[in-house]
Every structure is written in C-alpha cells, then in structure tokens.
Image 1: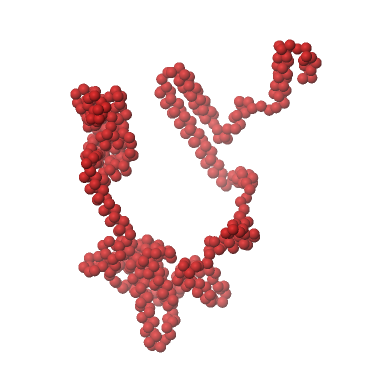
Image 2 (image 1 turned 90 degrees about the horizontal axis):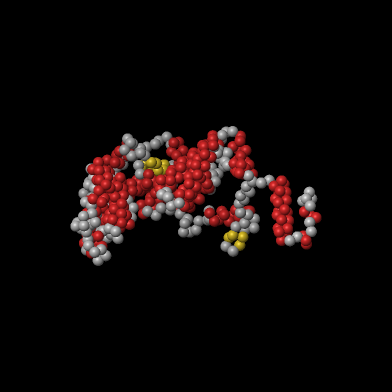
Length: 499
Ligand SMILES: [Zn+2]
C-alpha cells in the first residue's frame, strides 16, 4: 500500500465514481497481499489427501463417473431419454466402487502381511500413544453411598458378583464343598487347596485317585425300564443315569450295613469312585448344571450328594454311541428289549415338548377345519387347499401386493371390477368377448403370451405344473418365475384395461 499514492488521496474531494475506484484499488491491494503471504488450497493439493493406495486407474474411473453424471444432467435438462445413459452410469459407478474396495483391501492385506516387521508396531504405537488409557472406576455407587477407596470398591464388586450364599441358594453341593476345604493336605509339602482350586480340580482329583486304585472293575448289570410313549429320548437317558447312581448307592449302603453287622465302623474306610458312561451329551450337560430343576436331574444331584457322604464319588463321561464300546452296546440292546415289553411304564411323566407338540397339533387341526369350512376365500382354497401349502408358499416367497391379488382373486381384472359395477363390462380388451378372469390372464390372454411362454418353459424343464401353486412352492426358481409373471400381469393390467 505504501508503494501507491492511495493514502494521499483526499476522500472528501472524491465523487461517487472516484470513491468506487478507490475501494476497488484497496480491495485489489488486499487480495494481492493475501495471495503473497498466505498458503492457499489449489486443485493439485487435493491429491495429497487421497489414500496411499490410490491409483491412476481410480483417478480415470472417477473422472469417467463424473463426466457421465454431468452428461446425464445435461440430457435431463433437454428432456432427452435417459434410460441407457443412467444404466451406463450405474454400471460405471459399480465398477468404480468395486475397484475402490479391491485396492483398499489389497493395501490392508499388504499392511497385515507386514506383521513381523517393525513398521506395523510403529504405526500401532503412534495410534495408541494419543489415546488416554482406560482406568477402572475409583468409586462406585452402593445403595445411596459411594465407595471411597480402591479396597472398598474391590470388596463391593466381590460382594456383588460373588456374594455369600443365602439359605435359598446354598445347595448341598456348596455345603459339601465347603466342608472339604478344611481337609488336611495329602502330603507334607502340599499347601491346602484354595476354594477355586477345589472347584476346578474336584473332577481331576477323583480321576487321579481312580488311577491309583489298582482294582478297576467293570460291571455290567442290566436293568430294563419302560417309559411312556410320550417321553423323550432325553428323559430316557437321564433316567438311566439316575437309576445307575441309585443302584450304586444302594449297593454301597448295603455293604456298609453288612460291615456294621460284622462290627466294623459305619465309615467305609475306603473311597470308591464310580465312572458312569453315557452317550447322551444333552443328559450329561443337564447334570453338570447345579441350577437345573428337571425332576430327574434334581433327584440325581441328591443321590450324588448322599453318595459323597459315604465316600462314594461319581464321575460322568461321555462315550460315543454305536462305536463299539462294550457297555454302550449292551445298554442299546437292553433298551431295545425294554421298548417292546408289554407292561406299565416305569416312568410316565411326559416332557414339556410333548405338551407343546400336542397343543400345536390340536391348534393346527382346528385351524385347518376352520379354513376348510369358511365360506370366503374360495379361490385361495382352490390354489392352496391346506394350511401347510400356505406355509410352504410363504417359506418360498414373500407376501406381495401382486401375489395377494392373484391368490385371493380380488384385483384389477375386469370380471371383478364389473361385479362391483366399476367397469362397464367384464370383457378382456384382447378380443372384447372373453370374460377377463385371473385364469384367463394367467393362462390364455395373448397380451401376456411372451411372459407366459417363458414361465411355462421353465416349468416344463423342471417337470412342474406351471399353475399349481403347491407344486411351485417346492421349487425356488419355479415360484420366483411365477411371482415375476404375476407381478408383470398386475403391473400392466391397469394400463391394458385403460382404467
Ligand atoms: Zn385377454
């Protein structure tokens, strides 16, 4: 500004034009000063913000998409047909998107393959360095108060997640486990077990003792029990396990009585471990859950607890069924015999699944009767005589406006419109003498000949009757073709009838 005479001009003596000129000059100087002193964003600098994996090809593709977009806009303004160009634009967009994805994943793969090299960690560290580390809460709300120290917080969390047993949830098994915690360790060097160790290793400990016992007996005692026909396989498997446990406990107690009579102490004096094998994973999983309330499971839990008090422990193992295990084979054979026995069932408490199934069947039958006897829906019933047919259809395709018209017979066809006095006559415009029913449209009308032929040819290849909805529902491509055909008819019908 100092290089010009601008500051010396007397504003008071200037007319409007002179003042405008002065303002222009000042603005020009300011612009120039800004351009020289400040960095500006130019077209080229945009390139810098592109990802590292950007390619020339992507630049070209992007350019083509933009050009097509502009061309389309120009044509739209001139009211020219757009279909072809719009399709071209969509295709090009898809290619561009695909290429973007491919390049981006290629680059990410490359990054991942560098796992062992240092720069991955350099980058990760750089990203993590700026993130504030998450801290555990120093204080939490307990009732109306807040904890004031870390110890208090820890105690509060412990109480919340691992609170003491209440009389309601303190099970036999818990009490039993606690009673054993105080047991003396096995050797002098062994520290006593902690609670968690007891929990985790109770199974293992039993195993170890089992292997240290020199005498491992295998007993095959057959017992047949018949279950009511409503019972499930799951119940049968559980019942077998329960019976095996009870039988073993009985035997143990009898042995105890004999010893008692002979004058030995009631305490057995030796530990016994019984391994029970079952090929039912579901039954074993149910037994594992202490909270399981299934009557047979609960009874088995009780037996296991009672047994543990007389030093009889059970371990349960899964054995693959029909795989040659001698005991499993015997059990299978015995079970077959039990099923054919003519006697009152030993167990007849039906499972919930049986109740549900029976109720579902009953509901279904009532529904089917109601469907059959209903006065309305004649066309639908003709096409889909059973409820199961409807279910199969809805499994194969979605409900649509057009399909509903075709299945119910309520639609735009003239026979229907004439019935409601909407159309002057019921005739199809193809010959003006045939009544335009849905059947005519589907099977005869020359207006839809081409689409009909396509559908019928597909069905003939599949050996499916082209208008039998129940048959069509069984084949995905056939029902899809049928729906496409119907959609076409219904969509064109208004125009065809000139409504
Ligand atoms: Zn027609």
